[in-house]
Image (cartoon, rainbow, N blue to C red; front, side):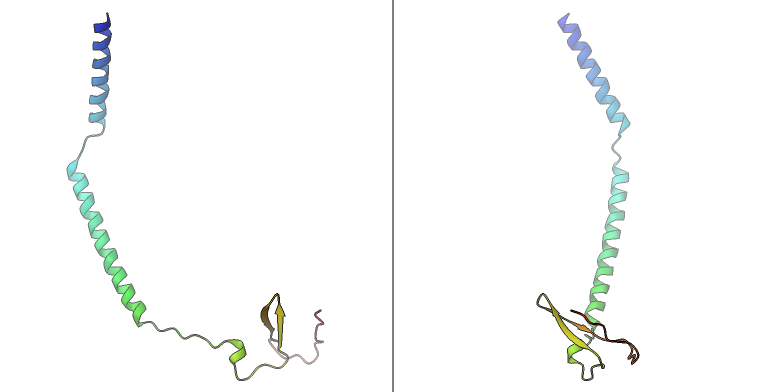
Amino acid sequence: MKKSKSMIAIFSLFIVVMSGIQAFPFRQEESTKQIEELKKQVNALEQRVATLESRLEKLTLAIPQTFPNLKQLPKGWEKREFNGMKYYIVPIEPDPKKVKPVIR
């Protein structure tokens, strides 16, 4: 009885393994084709990175002059400080009719 149960278990396991192999066959041709496509993509991306890096080396950035270093300041500007940080209030357009707000 034990021998027949063991044989049935082994036979069942054999069927499960064989069905798994047939369900997912190993296709080397497809995987090598996919590997070649991925290698082509990697080469194309490496070339693109190289061209972008060469363009970056040629690029020069002009850093704008900061506000306090300008030679002419607009009328009505105010320099203030909040928690140790400096900030500036600069009017966009001079408006003589507008009353200056009181900030405390």
